[in-house]
Image (cartoon, rainbow, N blue to C red):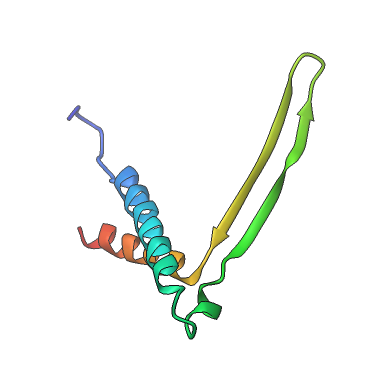
Length: 87
């Protein structure tokens, strides 16, 4: 490692949070078949439409994303953050 550089682990923390969120989402979809848990596992959708354009004379950009979050996703992300802090 070069002198004067600090290894903060930011990339590892982000990777563990995203991995935890993905695993939490997968577990949430698996637990969705139980009817008493289904209301808690419905996704909250944040939608920014893809027909939002930034148009220049010579170039046009189109922006959009859709974010679907459940309780299981949040718990998985928190678990990934906890793992990153402990590791």
